Length: 386
Image 1: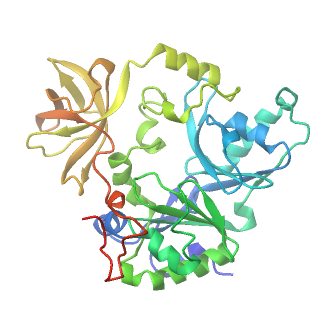
Image 2: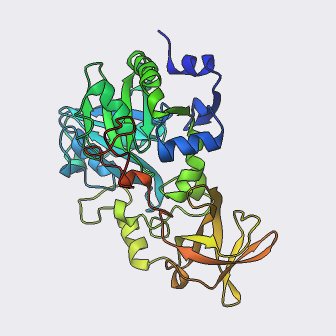
């Protein structure tokens, strides 16, 4: 059986290591892959995402104690985003929880299957306290030949509908459907675009990869690698350890408390997270942009206001959508508001005037595309609300 990795190597993809697994870093230039994900469709191998199954009658109690979100509100074929916290209330990673009629699948881009399973086993050491009578069956799905593909972009729904039918178009965010070829198709996305993950066996994934390549030609679909996220995750911030772990894992500072359900029953790190929330944050993550000529902004560049340092740059990139350098900064809370001028960034090339910005930094094109009204290939329909 041919694997996705063999397909990529055959097609000269440049490989990289993500979440401990080898998948494409890029197929094309950053400009080509960026244009595809923001204007058309980008297809990437997402098999670096760990997939752990937790099955059994008491799977809910175990998964709900791991997750900061309240898993009790989702039902079969629904999904939920959640943080996984450390005991001190800081962010260990994030997961998507997929509910099935027999239990759950846990998906993570930044926690390995080993890490997830180890955390679940630690919880099971106190199974009696959680009323877990029957130990759930926990499995890493990679040894079973599982992987994932992600399609992302304003017209990802349209090319998928050509293979799986119009049920794709009606699939709500964070719900999934099972397909005749044994895959799960999850509507997801962290960057403001239509996005779908196809999860399951390698044989089916390889077949649908080839189908999508062929069917995607009229849509200007491009293959890509996970390096495309380097720019998108500054434009549309989400939990990304490569960005934040050297600066903060505090959910209050990173403005990620929306992913913590403080009023649910106990979960890992709950009491510590409540303490962090009550204490407030001395600094917060905000967007910031130069408002004068700027040759470059680097991580650790100081941010100044009223003659003193009030923050630090976490990450800066050039945003093609904004046609400008943009950055994320941790700024003292009394200054951490959107659209405030009067800041300076102390860059290597000198002080540059700047102002804070709301995030995400721009209005995604996918927000202007309605699957019931628009089409990339049907000339009888407009391509978007524009």
